[in-house]
Length: 293
Image 1 (cartoon, rainbow, N blue to C red):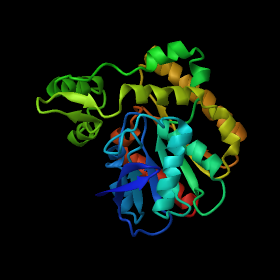
Image 2: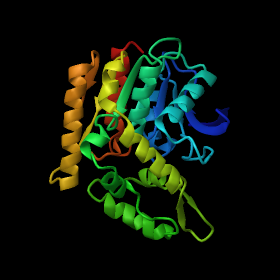
Image 3: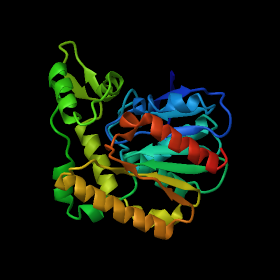
Image 4: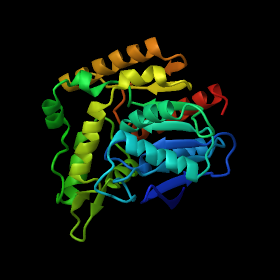
């Protein structure tokens, strides 16, 4: 794995890459909200061994990229992705997006349906498979539910203990814990502070809520693979509600998209790249073969 920076749209974007001289179309990863490029660090090496060239960027405000006060709407983030692809001259890439990244890819595929930087396919990993305003029609309720917990200033050891408690049903590896910790800065007193500012976080949440996901499905003309997660039993009421929203979204996509493959990930958490990297890498590789990468 290698690390570098690009100056695009007036900000410095950090990115990781593997096997830059690989064969076929490049694969570009986009992480989710309040995440970072390292979430792909368990999946990308498996694909690199298969011969693919891979790139994963930190979106503005995330990871090691610059953190301006503005530009946290889907259109601007999509423009950042487009500028990154042009700057690296990555023609007809296969795009893989997790969570919020799935919405970015839907918008990108609709905006850049033709030309040298149009995608040869998109893979949506438990993202872009529902319309948030349909699942949570009241913005104030959505805002309340999706505001992140106040973690700034929490001692690192306490946070790691909580991480393990929150994820005890799948027992994350040390590498997965390290990747989750990359979402935070750690000060000299071993206290954590989210890299993504709360104001920026909530601007992104609002942009997702405003995004008319179902209207974008028929605008996507390249092949698409949806990989939604189905939580393990027993499900909480919240899990059940999100699952039903995803099922409605998948049904809408199947009715309006011409080149769609859906592969549910059973008994999976939302962060599939951390829990099931081997299975995810194989699904991506199978789809890459399907679209001729």
